[in-house]
Each structure stands twice: as C-alpha cells, then as structure tokens.
Length: 269
Image (cartoon, rainbow, N blue to C red):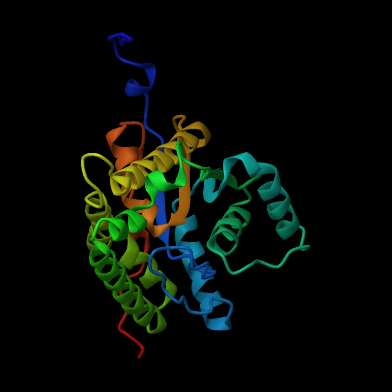
C-alpha cells in the first residue's frame, strides 16, 4: 500500500478559484438518455432573446474560463468552431455548447472555450453495465419498465414546464436544491439493479461517478489557480456530482447560478 505523506498542500492555504456549474437541458434534443424531454425549439426569435438574456446574466459572474461538455481530447475542433463563430463564418447550432458556451465566451472576449468532458468506454465489457438486460434476465423486468415509465413521465412534465416558461426558468429549475435532489436520487435506485454476484446497476453508477471525476480533473487543470473563475455548462444530470466534487475536494469556491437568475416567472400557458 502506498503511504500518503502528511502535511498541508500549498493549494489549501491559497485563495480558492471560483466555479459555477450551469446544469442545462440538452437543447438540441439528442434523445440519448433513459427518458428524454422534448425541448422547445430554441432558435425562434423569442427563445433567442431569452438565451441572450441568460448569457448577459452569466457574464456578470465575470468568468475567466467557459468550460463545456465537449471531449477534452478534441479541443482543436472546439477551437476551430469558436474561431469560425467569432469570425462570422459559423451560425450557432441549437446545442448548449454553441448557444450558451460560445456566445458567453465571445461576449467576454475570451480567447477560447475549454473542452472538459470525458466519455470514452469504461473498463470491461458492455454487459458489465447493462442493468436493463440483467433485470430482464433475472425476473425483475417489471422494475425496469416501471423505472423507465416514471422517468419518462417526469421528462414529459419538464417539457410541459419549458413550453410555458422562459429559458432562465428552465435553468433555475435544474439548479435549485429541489432540482438537484431530484436528479441525484435515481442513481441510488439504479445501484440496486443487481445482486452480490453481479451488479451492473452499481457498476454503471460507478462509471458515471468516474466520468464526473474526470471532468472535475479537467476543470481543475484549466481553472484551479487562485483568481480563476470558471463557468461550466453541462447537461443537468452532471450537476449534483460536479458540485459535490468541487466542494468536497476543497479546491473551489462554488458559485450558485440560481443567484444570478431572475425570479421564477408566472407560467405563460
């Protein structure tokens, strides 16, 4: 076993850099999750105004880095995308990387947008993480059916909320305490989808934790020095874990995006 040296690391006594996690719905409707919300078209004039207003709010945090859910190993592609946008050679796509990340960085005059994601294959075989197949093979298929149906009902309710509220309200709902708790809770249920001999649910959740720890490592590398201020724009499901990593590591001061948003508005429909 490797012994850990005792002592106070230099970073522990230095002023902490600031980190704001902005949990977002996937604006481009990729449809890759267990349950998927049909997100409103954000390219309409009204939604574009709402995005500009949100970006204005985030800019008041005065970030020195804008980090996005883009593979860290493909930074060069993101650099080209950002350069093309700033030069007027590119129209923004409907995803949150473009609509929020590129727009915010350009507004602030930042030289780049930082790619900090990691989503390569986890160790082992796909079957090691296939908890739906395990449940069906072990007489527990109804648990998966119930879980998926409940998740889709929640996604449908989210879609109904989004249709009647401005985009800042979407962000508030995903990033307030109730929203964060709701997003964190399903992982504890998925972790029960297995047994002592083989638990693909717990393995899948473990891989999800590991992915977010890799993202945290990337965030620390780009914005971990004193005086740095990073806005990280990610799918909302990452929010609870990235916040936990930032706080429990002791390496960041966590800024609450909700405090930068307008109050929740009345439903328009």
